[in-house]
Length: 100
Image (cartoon, rainbow, N blue to C red; front, side, top):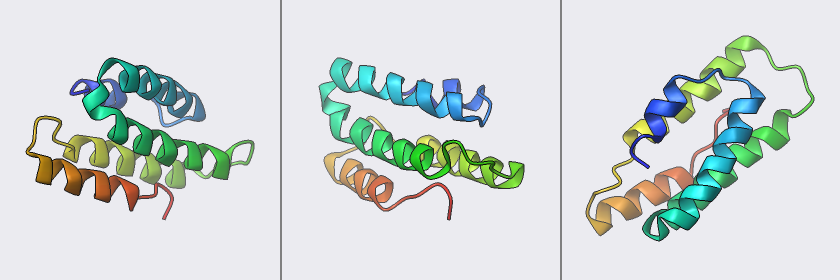
């Protein structure tokens, strides 16, 4: 999962990137069972963003801010951290949204 931020930082902030990210997270969830909860929370976060703005025009500034929030969130995750730090990461992701 550590290369997730690198991949994401090279993508456009469009809807297709979020859909591909959901697919990547589903694969990672199966490949890295110790990251399953984090993958599912990120999938939910991305999915709720997709549902909120699917088929609606979205101002570029809003899309840019949401994508930057996602980049910052993924960059802040420490996949090799202690269980306490990982729990804090899980709680932070669970409390996040991309559009506010």
